Image (cartoon, rainbow, N blue to C red; front, side):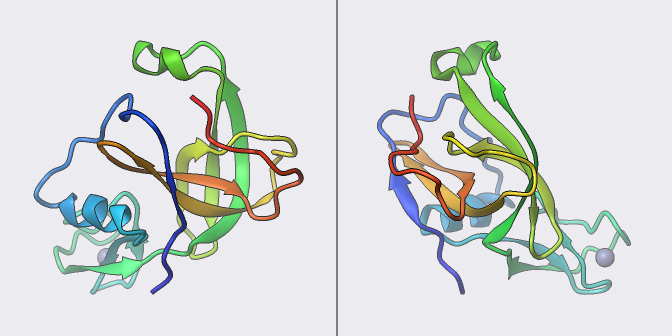
Length: 150
Ligand SMILES: [Zn+2]
């Protein structure tokens, strides 16, 4: 299984995800660099975020499976006027990523020069003091020093 790079980030997550008995596997795995979601055993399709019921065929026969660590940036924006919880982090970049395995997801982007649709990206783990978050970053950074800034 591919393991994502993990980067230590000072402080706590501004809006920690709610972890349920079901999603605990995802969040605890992410903290170890495991990038996974549920895959339906009936129709064979992955779903993200992980779900106990397949949204394509309603089967409850799902198992954990590895996600693609790489993908393509579909779209992105830089947030200057943020919700209150994230106000202390502005400006920051978020994007929509198409993983090579076919999943489209929204996530934080490691900000830096050269962000544009079509950019090859890879997923990475931001290891905060209270737990992990996932983010995407350019696969081939155009300059050194692009990093998650608070
Ligand atoms: Zn299914």
